[in-house]
Every structure is written in structure tokens, then in C-alpha cells.
Image 1 (cartoon, chains in turn green, orange):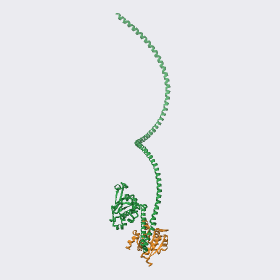
Image 2 (cartoon, rainbow over the protein chains, first blue to last red):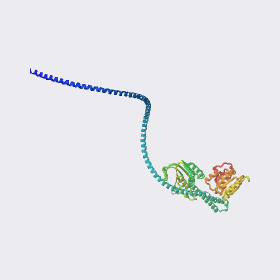
Image 3 (cartoon, each protein chain N blue to C red):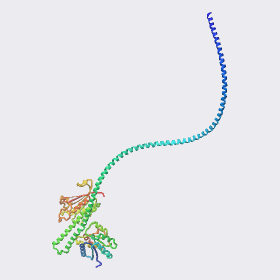
Image 4 (cartoon, chains in turn cyan, blue):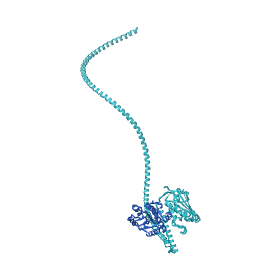
Length: 421
Length: 158
């Protein structure tokens, strides 16, 4: 029974404390009622203030309304303006579309052009490269030309010197030519005198001696007649000499006109000229394989005439003359003569007889002027005939040789270079 | 007699040749009348003085003073009254180009003066015979040159 006492006491404290706490809470609640009354009063004040403030705000709102109306009017005007501007902008946009299309087209064109330009550029680049190469080549060529120019200048300088030398030589030759013209003129004058003036007195001597022998024969002794015969004969020889010399000098200065002619023709003409002589000596003349060649006809006729007449004149009394004339075209190296050019073609003419011939040591001398191997009593003649032959062969740029042995005939070989017309 | 006689004119400055020509002509069996002039000038004056009675033939020396045979021949052949006169050129020399020129210039014949009198006689005789026969005949080059020798050969044919 002790614990029950105690728990009461504790219950009594707890109730007291509870009573105390309720009293305290009543006090607090009162205080709070006072604060709430105060608060309500404050809130009443505040509402008044707020009503005043709302009045003010109303006024303010009315004013703002007016403003807003004004602003609405202004906005209507601005709207119209904006509509107008919009329309403008649409037009501009349409224009811009067109312009855009145009620009698009132009762009396309420009692209094409650009593409073309690219190709063209490549081409130009290629050409540039080529030109670069060509330029390089030209530089080399230029250097070469510069070198050659230099060489040419040197050559030109040499030529100037050579020219001067030639000019000098020309002048000398001109002088020489003038001298030759003078000499030639003199020769022509001599020729004329020989052919006319020198012969004329001789002809008179011959004719008048003949007249005396004819008309005065009864008044002359035999010795007298013989003297007159000798006068005639000497004058005749002198005329022959003059004539032969004339022929010789004419072969020097006469016009040298070459013609293509058949040697047969020339030989036939000479045979006709010597017909009586040939018949008288019962001579046989054989001409075989005669070629055609470029020669001075009247000179060559003289040449053949002299050779054949010689062969007839120096024929052997023991046998009738047999003269063999041959010709052929042959290369120099096939002929046994050092004076001939190996590669050249020659017309080789040979005249062979069966006459008295001559000793081999005279083979050159017989071609000299006035050189005779026999006295006048044995064989008449002036000693010019073979000199004329040699001169004529030389006029044809050829050579002539003679080969013989005494009493074994003679052969005359003539070599004339073959020329085109 | 005078009707048959051959009128021969000789133009030559060489008096020896004139004498020989005259003697040769006299010895020929022909009736001739010879007139001699000694230069070309004289010759042309004589021919032009009497063109109605020209000689039958003129023997013309090539080389003469004053006017040579070439000049006389050209004048004769260019003169209508004289050109029918046969002209025989007569010279000491016988250069071929001279002979060719004379033929071209219209000479009838060319005679080289022979150095033998009998040949002189023959060639004169022969040429006169040819002239009297062939006055109207054409000139040919192959009987242009007359010599004593071809006279001998051809006289048999006359």
C-alpha cells in the first residue's frame, strides 16, 4: 500500500502542473487576443489606405485607357502602313525571285564559262609548257647561230682578204688580157698582110717568070730557062710557106666553135679533097667505127687532111699506101699514157700507115714548126703540117703522139676528151 | 662585030694585074672590049654615068684604095639600075669568110688570082663563057669559086 500513495502524489503534482499549465495557457491566449485586436485595428487602417490607393489607381487606369485608345488609333495607321509595306515587300520579293532566276541562269552560264576557262587554262598551261620547251630549244639554237655567226664573220673577213687578192689578180689578168688583145690584133694584121700583101709580089714573080718562059723562050739559053724555072719554083715554095703559116696561125686565133659531128663525114670530105692524090698513088683508106664527137669542124678537117696527106706523101715506093683510121671511146685508165686522166672518157683516133716511117727518136720533134726529116729534093713540104695537127689537138684539149720505126709505117694516136654539148 | 663583042669592065688598082688581065683577054678566042678603072670610086662614077649601057660583066678586085670591092658590090646590088650587072670578085687571097660574105652579098663568082698565066687565061675564058650563058641563071654556092683548075675540068663541058 506505500506505491499507491506515491503514484497519487505524483498524480497530484502532475495535476497541479497541469492546472498551472492551463492557467498559463489562458494567460497566453488572452495576450494573443489583445494582439489580434491590435492586429484587426491595424488591418482596418490598412484597408482605408488601400481604398485610397485604389481610387488613385482607378484614376490612373482611366488615364491609361485614353492613352491606350490613342495608341490603338496609331496602331491602326501603322497597320495600314505595314500592309502597304508588306505589299511592297511582296512585289520586291517577286522581283527578287525573277532576279534570282536570272542570277541563277547567269550563275549557270558563269559555271559553264568557268568550266570552259578551266579547259582553256589547261590548254594554255600546256601551250605554255610547250613554249617553254620551244624557248629552251630556241635558246640553244640561238647559241648555235651566234656561234655560226661568229664563224661566218671570220669567214667573211677571210673572204674580204681573198677578194682583195682576187681583185688584184683580176686587174693583173685584165692587163694581161689587154696585152693579148693587142697581140691578137697585131697577129690579125700580120695574117692579113701574109694572106694578101706578101703573096701578091710572089704571084707576080711566078706569073712573069712564066710569061718570059712562054713568050721569050726562043731568046733564052737552056741555062736561062732553068734559072727562070728555079725562080718560079722558089716563089711557089714561099707562097706555100706563107699559106701553111697562115693556117697555123689561124688555128690559134680563129673562132673556136664546137659542134657535134660524125667523124665519117670529115674523113669523107678529106678523101674528096685528096682524091687525085689518092688515085695517083693507088692508096687504100679504111675508116672503121668512126664515132661522133664535139669538135671544131674546120680545124678537125684540116687535122685529118694533114695526117692523110702526110701518110700519102711518106708512102713507101715499094708498096701502095694503106691507111687505116680507127676511133673508139675509152676511159683514160685503159690507155697507156700518163698524161690522160683515168676517170675521163676519151675519143681515141688512130691513123696508121704502111709508109716509110721514121726513127723513134724523132717522135716529138716531128710536131715542131719547120722540123723536117727529109730534104726538099726527097720530099717537098714546109715542115708545118704536123705542127698544125698538134695545135688543133691542143685546141680540143687533147694530146697526140706518134710511134714509128724506120720503114715500118707510122701510127698517130689522138686522144680528145669526150665533152657534152 | 661590035654586036657580038663582050663588054668587060675591070676594076683593079694593081697595074701589073691589069696588064696581065689585058694580055690574057687578048689571047682568048673571044671578041671583047676591056675597060679598066683603078679604084672603087672611079668605078662607081663610071657605072652611074651610063646606066643604060652597062658592061656584060665586071671583074672587081677586093682590095682597092678609096672604095674596096665589098663596098662597090654592096652599092651595085642595092642600086636598081645596077643590080643586074654580074660581078666577079677577083683577089689574091682566098679566105673562106671573105668568100662566104661575097656570096651572101650577091657576087656572081669568086676568082683567086692565079700565079700562072695559062691558068689566068683559062679562068677568064671559063668565067666569061659562064656569064654569057647564065646571065639569067641562079647563083649556086658550089660553082661560086672559079679557079684555073676547075676551068680545065669544066671547059670540056662547055
